[in-house]
Length: 119
Image (cartoon, rainbow, N blue to C red; front, top):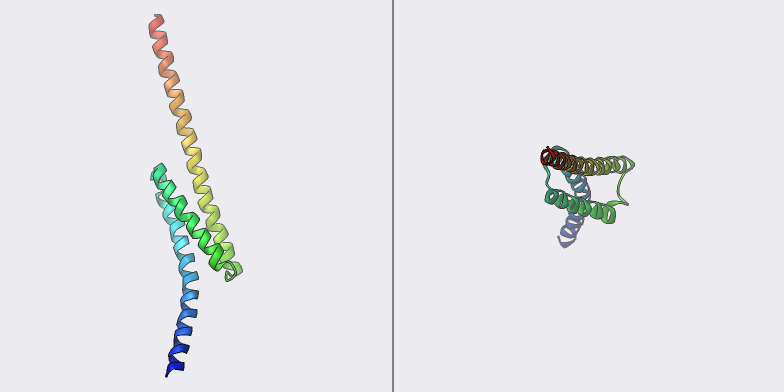
């Protein structure tokens, strides 16, 4: 009886490990999809939280599951990483654009004020 229980426990542990890899990959894909959907409304704090979560996902996947990943899983993981990095880059570009627009508006207002003072 003890041997059967030990064997059942071993099978459960092995199954849990496989599910864990699958679960992490599914959760990572869902995370990237959520960021894709929600990122247009992200604040800087939201991005910081997302980056922290991304780093944790990648660290765990690399440290615990990289040896177990199939070529298809590696390809999908690379694709999801690329999507996330592109979303970050898009956000940085939007921040730069917004900053430039604000600077231009400020300069236009200053110029208009100066012209009014001259007239």
